[in-house]
Image (cartoon, rainbow, N blue to C red):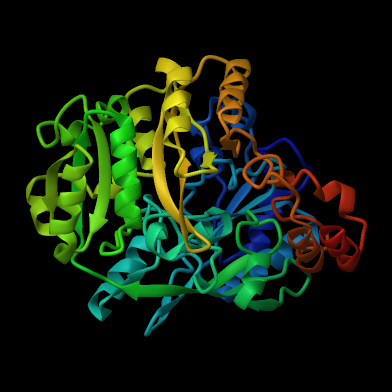
Length: 468
């Protein structure tokens, strides 16, 4: 079988026979489909990555089968990309160098549920984990808005925060990730266990430095959360209210999102349920906090349009309100108009209301802000995931400069390499562990701009660059 990617001379028919009886996908159309994730959120990444394909998809159903896949890849020097649900936005699961795509969705057992933790295999769907936790009175400390199709391994490898991060902090906060098990990509794949702060050697590394097989995560007490939607006459008023709710000493919301009124027009399932042409505050609160929540909304000049239990929400045929938060907001707009894209922007001073007002005036109709309140280091902060009406890469760069001019930090969502995008620097600890666990550099290496400059060094020499 010829190389679908056109980037190697490997006999993929022979590889498939070596992998038998593990399930493989050889059909070029299906392989190409499995070579994509949500990189099309970015027109820049779409142009860059739409022609990148793997050569063979393999779907192991056990750790034993996964080890065989890694052994064969090592023997034939094949690039490897590990794929979960494919919900990443930056091309994390795109095989830029071709080669083998290993899909983990069949390695999906929920292994153990305890008081305050859950231990699962990497291919488990996040929605399934939350469903299994519910009878125990618990839920995941945080989860992405794409929980129906996202796997927990992909979330840990490429994610940072989600629904619940306002209460419990980002994934990297101490205690949220309890243990991560990974396999090396070597002739005899071996298991390595990371606990405590060492989980950060694997977390948010985009799968470049080990194959995640099992994760133990923090769980928290679940509540009969009320889905609340409140509307405001101005974005600043909605933002001020969101910050007040997020910091409220008597309210412990797990989500507070602020959405520009122009974005809300792209939420057809809210039509008739919230006031039109108003800026929106989206939140989850505990039922006993409703009176205090409503008072805060009124004091801020807002109107509480809806406060629904899950049963009431289902009856009203309204989706989970987290689908109006994080990058699900971007998806709602893209369903209607593919000219839209987004950006990731840090709010360095969450209390600087004037800066946000000036920024929005400077951005005009080209950029529509959308803020998520999150807790970092115990303090409430915010990120902006604005809708941007894309015209050209050059104009997008000018928009980035507008954010920077007003004191906001851009974590570029339109760059496919981990150091140049969201992290803003090179994590040499990640690369040192890549050298230890992936000595040939076969795992997702195209995603690291720095790998080629350090690949010939020892792990200790690479890690010393982090200290230096």
